Length: 303
Image 1 (tube, rainbow, N blue to C red):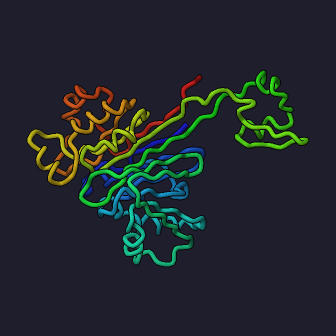
Image 2: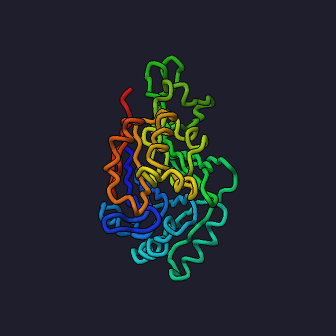
Image 3: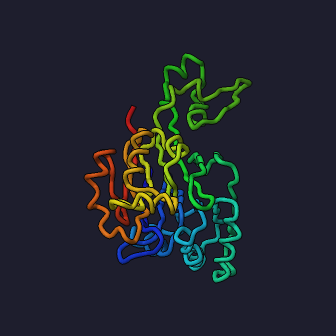
């Protein structure tokens, strides 16, 4: 099971009932936060999450509505007696911006480690989660993130027996280890069936539509995408400010073949985004016009 929650769905400025942009995922006890706008730590508490759950923070870009909550969040972690390091990953320049913000959060009782992205597309692992960072099209350097969890094949005792794999090593090999036992090497492919379908989440805010988003989101179980504007006549403003409309996001979701799309990062002028739900679903039917606290448990399909 993979927990996913939109903590804040507002862009530019917070509103009553709508915190700034942030999302949280939890998998096997490890927490991953994406962006940290003002109000993130309050939204975490409302959802029942603990800041202790957060191991890594992914930053899309360094505009204030995506990073302004970091000093308060890190202070809350310190006040909760956290000692484990926190890792922050984002575009080049992220460390300088965060360290400047955290002048008001000195003497934290844990290390903050930084990794900065510089290529158009970069891949790395966070424990069991594989991450693809991909550059999008905003007015400063900005990245989206595709997160995936692979699922190994089912254990096949008959295959293990046919390959003469001793029971003494089954457990370790089943967990993905290559084991040498009594002079013979045993590998997972000797006891496992074909890899099964995993899970994939793609997250993108603050961008014009671009092929890099469609490519990265292809086949996602959940596509979280900005919908800054929905009202008629806002197309030029979206282009000028390097943002997207609901309908552009829905078109990308359709092209990428995703299972479901959650819209987020609404303009403050978009007071009732749900008003436009029917129109956007004409393009991509499985669209959710999200609110703060939007939550799902993604489950592996039985195979």
